[in-house]
Image 1 (cartoon, rainbow, N blue to C red):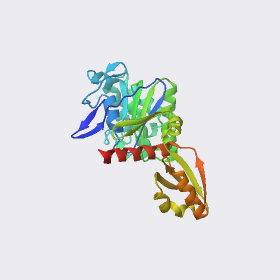
Image 2: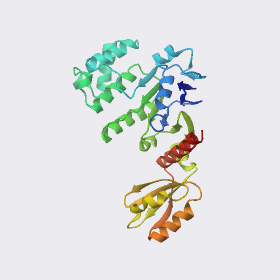
Image 3: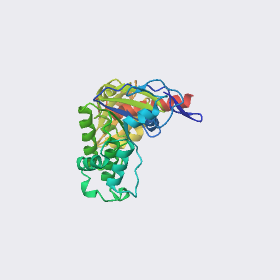
Image 4: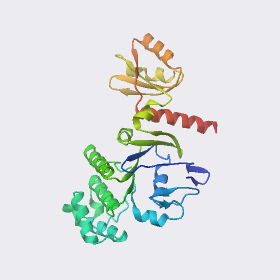
Length: 297
């Protein structure tokens, strides 16, 4: 599928396949096309060009049917701030045609630990409970496909864990879950991921497989002054990035950098060791390649 805004392609020839019972991650920097992709799959945004199906419905001709059957949670708060928790959930149940909407709202509140906030205006909830309410509203009609746009942004570690545990539970019950995130530590919890750069998929697969097959190398530069070598490391040919990791410096580089880094380490009294690539390292490599392509174009 393709979606353009003026001369810019937000999504460029993107193709996805989702299995039942998996949590699939759309990974990439802000502006990479993740939100646009989810809005198209949710039937909210009509793509410029697309071919495929969502839950058996044509992506172009049956957007209303898709919207009625998909659970979509946007990054921004999309409920009525002046309505109470209960009123928001009951209204959402009515919109989706859920039988006994009042009972459905009560059940959703109990499931998400929101019962004590039943009469609280949605706009007065804390960030964590606000996310709970949004997720409860997105799931109130028991959708088989759940699309979540940056569902843990701004949440503390406990709240993030709660959201991910719920997503994983939904997947074990057979639902398909697509979650967009720029948090690469969270992306490792997905069964498969797709890296998006400027609307294009540059890699896809299990997180560990994507990291292991990325065209780059990772090194750990250690020693008493290793962190102070960042500027010198940045000048080494083929080095993509470096960042502090405890007392050491982690270096991500392309082919040919190792001999230069070894000489730098020896001259500085430091040690250099190869390290396994991580998914965040892969993101740095893909981002670097994307920037080079953009400059070339």
